[in-house]
Image (cartoon, rainbow, N blue to C red; front, side, top):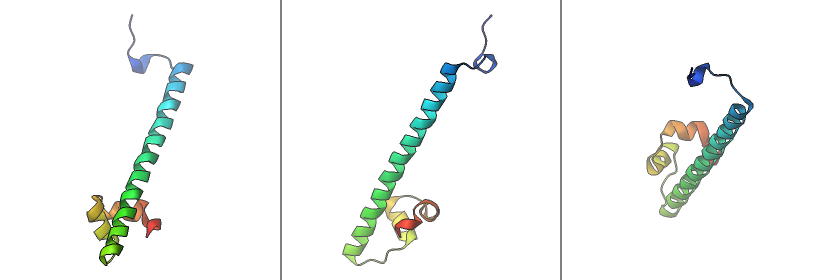
Length: 78
């Protein structure tokens, strides 16, 4: 008799796999966050060079993310 994945007993291998997947997800999120921070910093530098007013909404439009995301995750950069 074959069991589907949700009915089979979890093993130590399953727990190790899940732990690796969770760690990989955290690593990927950190890489993406760092890349977005770099885009924001570059946009802010460009605004300064051009003499433009730096606002969260303007930077969000320039970078291509929502102003709400800027507010929630990247406010310390301002």
